[in-house]
Image 1 (cartoon, rainbow, N blue to C red):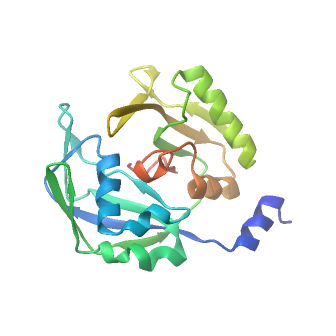
Image 2: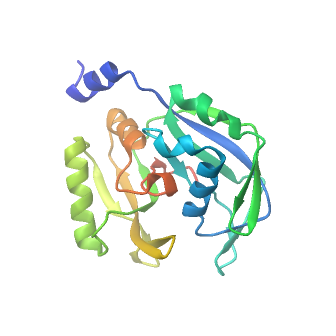
Length: 214
């Protein structure tokens, strides 16, 4: 029997995919979400206007001094509706400048989103909610609006809430790592498609199965 959410999803017929680009380069700022988005929109301003697009930041080995070292496993991922793939596929082979550093993108692999009962986001930001308790309450309200059921918790680091920041121009935005568990397949896919909070084009609020790196 179809649920209301599934019926709505079938009517919209929107299929989301991840484009997974190999990243060739040496070093990036650890906080590069805004710089990466700026480089992408410089390459093609249409990225500003694409509906449903989210961007994951690039993983690497942190030097604990504000930079990461890229490895052969470093990847750049864009999530978007499948019919928008031709608009960003041209990033293959392109060189992007992020701050003082440059990277080159390989040919992407394309993956359909897969459901998982447990998801996590490296950083979720909700404007006006910078303390753990009220932040979690705001998250619950967003989940209720989406009709997503599951157990939500702030990630921990050294037994404390995993508080993170992202710098956007002159401003520092505060958020938290977040984990969702006990998700149905339907809710898992929906959460991966729409995310939570803001700044999803800068690496925030994007959820992946817990076994994946961010």
